[in-house]
Length: 440
Image 1 (cartoon, rainbow, N blue to C red):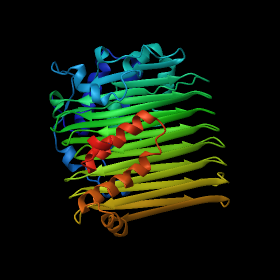
Image 2 (image 1 turned 90 degrees about the vertical axis):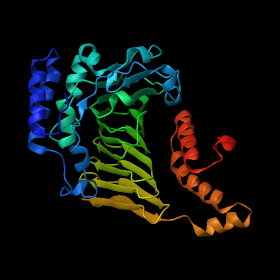
Image 3 (image 1 turned 135 degrees about the vertical axis):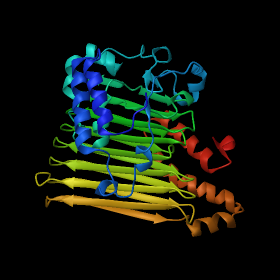
Image 4 (image 1 turned 120 degrees about the horizontal axis):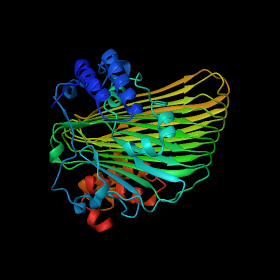
């Protein structure tokens, strides 16, 4: 049965969930989510953070919850999206966990990766503690919407002092069977004291039909821990993708995020982290590549709440044809957060006269002993570099392609994991050059 994104429909969903055979912790979260959505609704362009992104086209579609049905999907169809078949991987197809396509047998003791439903039983106290801790349903309409449908998703739990060099991969795939459907995955990530791990989230669309992904990730990085979180968004061209990532960090911890965006008709990624322990740091980088009539919005918020913390942020966008990019990055420094060291950079390359970008880097500083800088640039291909390459015998089209790729590769090189970095560089190379088969 389809449902519009309206408060009455969600309250009905919550009532149904309360009577369903689901764990109490999820029942309560669903009911609260629906109630919060009734109060908040979907954001409009009157909301400052949504001023340049309208969700009216999303709200108008009567989406139905996805069921996971797709008898035609084979493991071979996912091969190119697995990145590395040896990685511990959970696969979700059309919103439903697929154990036959998943494998976590290589995980060492002390690291648990489970679908959310199984984790409620196996890691009950951990799930109860984390669920809604960094991303409460009251945060905004989309987070409330996610909470009202809680049930799918995953939990990644890395015990204290555990180090895993092999990334954990969460792969979400939508096929033609998911057309006009919606799913609302919730991911909980916990890196306990002095732990170290990498989590890769891949969002793949194997259909050009409309569908709606509304994902929320709650991330807790405890004292001395390091968590690298790589998000690869390659949804189908008709997709709507809204993702919220909320992280909180302990003393001397490090949260590393990279957000790669090429898919979807409309996409929005919000990455926020609270530096809540002295001496901790965060690195938020990303690359957005859009063309056609695509709309992509990236929002970041780094909140320095303790002294002697650092933040580094580089976001780049490449916009072609009639695409529209949005970047809003805020760095907030509390009065207690003395000796903060923060740097934010946003660069946009426009490949056509009809592409547009709205960039808004922001600093709000209430401490006096800080080093904070921010800057944004918008431009076209460097004509001097283009002339130089043409003077060396490179034709104009190839020169433009290579310069565009070089602009993107600069931020991709910040990804430490070689497998992910190489895969995304090849995707980028294919997008902008005809030389992939030669140089890739």
